[in-house]
Amino acid sequence: MREQRESPVVQEWLVRIERTIEGVAIRNEKQGIAYGQWFDRVAERREGGRGRLAEAFPYVPAIVWAALFLGGLLLVTYVCFFADRGERWLVQALMMAAVTVMVVSGLLLVRFLDRPYETASGGIKPDAMRTSLAGMERESRRLGPEESIPCDESGTRVARR
Image 1 (cartoon, helix red, strand yellow):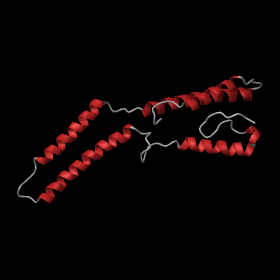
Image 2 (cartoon, one colour; image 1 turned 90 degrees about the vertical axis):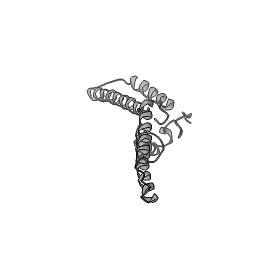
Image 3 (cartoon, one colour; image 1 turned 30 degrees about the vertical axis):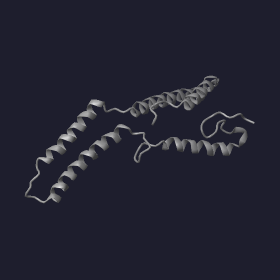
Image 4 (spheres, helix red, strand yellow; image 1 turned 45 degrees about the horizontal axis):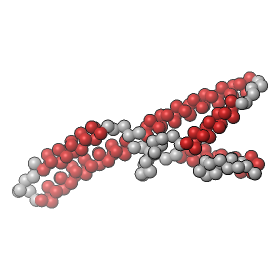
């Protein structure tokens, strides 16, 4: 998501899983219901992935960024007009600094919200995926080496022994 594209490794595995499930022979009503639920979950997963991928692209157009920067610059300049020679410079500097900090903070907040999948603090992390992978690894260890997951940590298929 951070790279604003689908993972080729994930896509390859999904295609393999779907090909495998297509070859399943349905023998009774329970299996038919399970088969139907499988396709419902596949549709949900695809739709969720599309939604996350759409959210990964920056949404704020360049013209809006230009307006935000221009507005911030005008606001800081406007505060300069309140300068008073009779007042101490420290008070005026603090007023300018406060307005500038608020403007810059607002711009940084918009940028942060525009790119939710970055590695910066507060970015959306693949916690659910990590949890799923940990569960798969536990299940693989429970099943033993003859039934282990046929890929390495990066998702690349490895030959079974």
